Amino acid sequence: MVMSADAMKASLDAIAAIEPGFMAALGRVGYPAPRVREPGYETLLRTIVGQQVSVAAAAAVWRKLETELGAGCAPDVLLARDFDALRACGLSRQKQGYARSLAELILSGEVDLHSLPADDEDAIAQLIRIKGIGRWSAEIYLLFAEGRPDIWPAGDLAVQIEIGRILGLPERPSEKTTRALAEAWRPHRGAAAIMAWHHYNTEVL
Image (cartoon, rainbow, N blue to C red; front, side, top):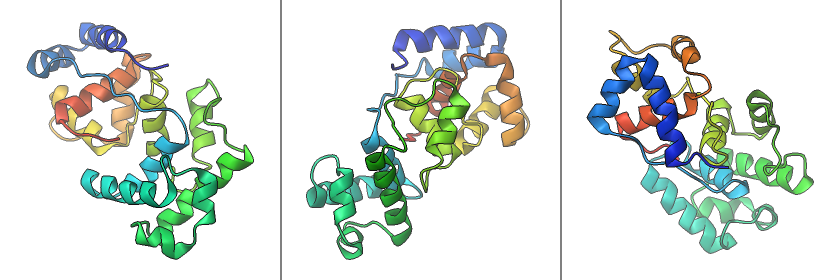
């Protein structure tokens, strides 16, 4: 299940009908293209690799990991490697802990990324059991890898900045305010988030 271009356009049109700021933003930058990632272990591992580093740096580490571990960095192969081997690929001690947590939960079946709960909050609760996967990472995964239409990453700085700009607010809204502002946009908040990133012109995953 992914959010198609037609579905995103319909969602944004529904928001624009009740929020003039979105109508104006669509006029300025147009509709965003769908952002789709493959559901499963590899996308979450890429999320961990990409935390707190640039897109270019994350890509370089991922290339080294695939050279060392093979395409997709299979969880059993990752767990078989020692600290120094993964360190040589650019994974810090902390990120190695996160990657191993993910690999162990996948192999044990404790987390099944292909049958997460239908309820968004329940799915987020499952994902944040993985070390290094906080609410933001879980929301990004559910939005891009599963195409869930009402995910709202209100803690994302770019979302806060752009929602403030789109709505013409005098300052960047807090996470709490950003969450409250979007209540009227249910069940289309995922498209609103993608629009905010499009308006900000940033890649998040």
